[in-house]
Image (cartoon, rainbow over all chains, first blue to last red; front, side, top):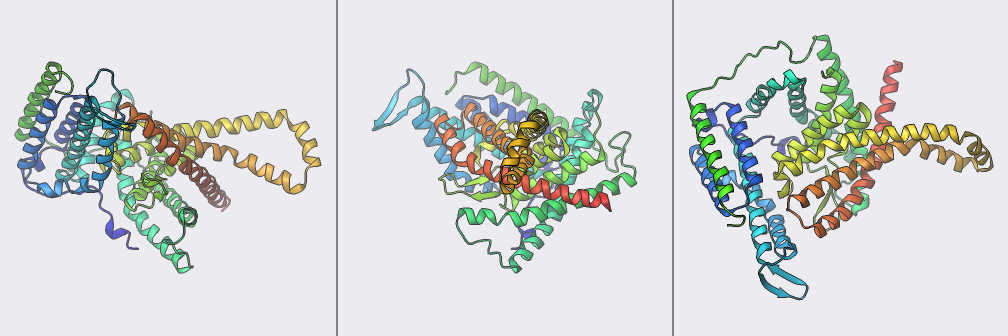
Length: 275
Length: 206
């Protein structure tokens, strides 16, 4: 039971490449554009273009390929299952039946649907992984705060919202230690967490959850008092020790992503689905 | 709109618990179904909605959703429309159901005071006691149950609508996972809210 050792939040791989040094805002916007493009695309050519673009980013950022795709491994069985579901259960009128056995009927539309969905999920996963691999959590939250800032004008408390995210990330480790203590204390009292059937195992989470939540709420009250006594008033008029700057590399990246967006829009308009 | 320090801190810490349950796998309960496990990672979101109101519910839900988007447990959570959007509603629905049940309880309590007293007098003290208890817990049970159902139904409908799962599969996952999740969520909501409220009243007295 060494909970704190196994926790990895945001698997940042430090590096000195152009991608690493880009402004976090540029990277967040680029990732968002890529995600939206992926959600809208329905043709193989569009996915091929995205694959090429992502491959370029992986090469430039010098991230070991195996490391970038490591997180995919546990998902492969479920991905395969999703593909099979689509192949046999996707229903569409006037489509070619590939083969037919008992109640199973594989259609051509189902095959394409399955392929596209697997590709979409794979690329979405790679885009978010690339973002977290090349950007530290600190600069991600910094960039997010900065990007949300214009929303203050319409009344969205952007800096406060990012503050909740920062508190959450900070407290994961603190509460993990707490959780470890609670689990050890219950084990010392004779609770065997890894034994029993489903219902017995479920019952054992109750004596862990209650102390965890109670202690979390106590810590919350302490933090509220600490922040209020230091006159925390949210983001209004706050300055930063490190300010973000747009560099020449950011401009190049912005132009590249704009050209790519244009290309993707053209591909999606010009091609039929499933081509 | 501005957020009080209290809302910021409590959303943050509840979000931390949701992330913690995810990274330690403690939030996954091994249910004997082909798909593997039921989740209780949405419990902090339900608690946020019930204890602190809809705003905290939405923010905690957003943190939970963002986490499951960045470290997806199932492939289709890589789509933000499946992982983030549905989670914003869990806390709100829990809060609304909880408040509505309390209101109904009050109204019906007043309406039926007379007849209920008569029936109560004829009941054994044990039975009337447990009836009272059930009445006390009902808002929490329903709040937890509806919050959990919101998560199951919205996530699976979104996954179906986006084309990741055929509807037959979604429905069977919904029943096999949704029902145990719903039961565990409503039990945990009662226990955790009552526990936290007891600590709070004890602290207020000091």
